[in-house]
Image (cartoon, rainbow, N blue to C red; front, side, top):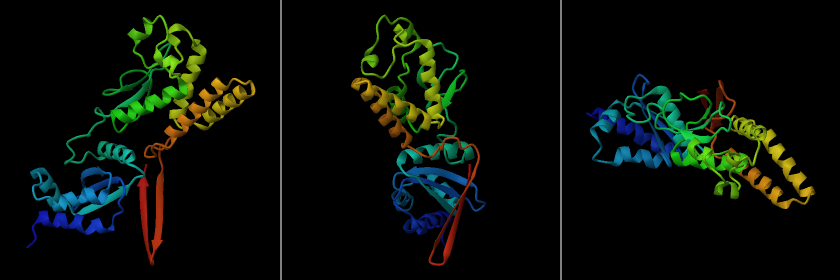
Length: 277
């Protein structure tokens, strides 16, 4: 007689040949369709093979496999999307075998305060108890830092803390490399700085077309006035904006609630997949 552990491994083993070698998220389900575990992988089949080929599995993993009767897969465009999707699903379903990521305290957000005179662009973990705009979660500190770096290039908002900001007598190197507008020494007035903040909030919220149009107009105007340095800055900002737009699609902007239905037909058989956002 096959024991429950071997049956769980068989569920996975039978599924592996049918899966694409893509990044994505897998979900192990019980006989009652309860989600037991949610995991991510750069290559889904390769990751799942470890469950059936390893002979020294942890006791917790063996217990999980013994309860596994179904396996569900969602593929993603890249590994970053898989990380974010995994985090979102774990927060939503809180599977019993996911001992990590059950809340978002370990995941960084990008924060922009809206009550400050000179709002700071920064990353934040833990409780969201400050007044301002929160964007995320991000898959890692590295991805949050990368996004902040790109936003600096586009909107030139300050990233320094309040103590450093209040005690500066001259612009830092970020001003020289065109990643900050140096509000600390009044190189930009409050009105224009706040406008840059609102543009950044609009952009991260998905209203990117008007930002692109605005930058394009700035570049064209600078070119006509033979101010090629200013035109180059606008060009680089447009390039950075395009780069961040295409980085991940898991948290689609402006999608608060939707039913997404996909149908595929092949060899007389149809498959229907429904996602609820």
